[in-house]
View (spheres, rainbow, N blue to C red):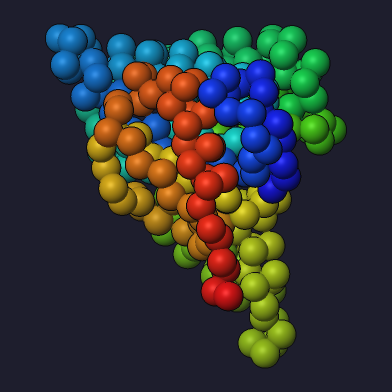
Length: 248
């Protein structure tokens, strides 16, 4: 975390505030947003992907170094109707092709990472796009943008224990650092602020259970497509106003 004047992005604030280093977002409510408008579920996912772009730009403006989005859980891809799954994959294909050609990602030196079982769940053509994005942005280090695709925190923790066991380590030598290195999120920094939209006051599928251990939590009743940049800034401002004691 570091301090920032915020002068360009919070017009009502002129004091110095604390900017979280890593913000993670559970963007809930896309399907409900579509249903409320008499639209097919994937129209909500399209609106959500457009809004995600807005929030990504806002995060970089505010000086947030790392931003994470939960794009889909394993259950999303295994249990939802085939037509919705296919539509979601088409949206991913369109969105990530656009991201691959985005000058902003390269100008702002954003490293993009994809975390989860997407290689097992996505078609080869889509997996190639994601792999190319990771390769082309792999040396960037100014900002980090993480997408969790076909991801479950419970699955991540289980595979981490299996990985630790496969290393045949002395149990007494296993530390927090050891377990962190076995997670899919090994390269990620701890989450300072976890935001969930869509009127749900809970986590799901153990999302980032290790990395949110000391996170501040922010819940909004707004469905994700309606969660705009102003609300995002307000969540960051609220984070700055809180007293984080870390057990002291």
